[in-house]
Amino acid sequence: MHEHEFGQQQSAAAAYLTTLEGRLRADGCGTRWEDWQGMPVLVGRRSDFRMRWAATNLHLFTVAAAVPRITVEAISGFTYGVLKYAKDTKGGLPVGLQTGVGAFPVLVSDDVDPDAVRWAEEQQRNRFACLARPVVVDCGQHHVGMYRGRPFIGGIYASHFIKKGTRYFYG
Image 1 (tube, one colour):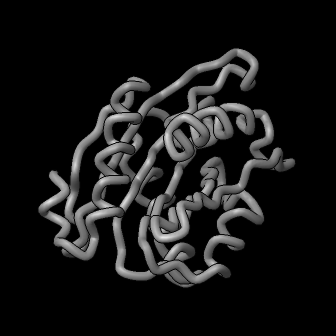
Image 2: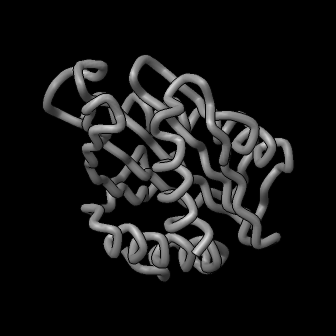
Image 3: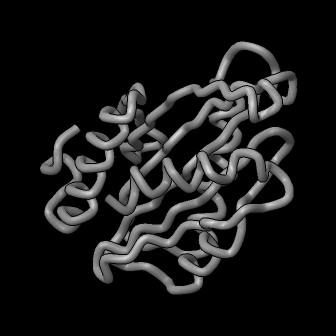
């Protein structure tokens, strides 16, 4: 997918997604574009195993889309949709059996409600053995909002999320 396919009003967001796709590929992620009910979505995926993660395999999904406006409702709905998608498509052992799912649900826009940025930054969002760190990219303000803390649940993966998030979104 190329920048012109997003339309003129989305050019900053499209440029960001093009850059993100390159960063994901450079980090060894498989990438592809999908159509989610008429919305072009970039999907990046990689899998990592670490003994220090209690010998688990973490499937990390990055799912990103350009949207006209980002609200709390938009990023929240997208986040839980991405978690379901990741859990349903990861394959292999069921989540929780030496395997987990991590996700970066990413919305990009130049029209962002500041409450949406705060929502993304305040905490990691979890479902059983599925962890998400929502990312809100405000192209107009040149700001990326993402939780960068170390939560109790899924805390063993925190440094991995922070490292990957910094590499992918803040470059």
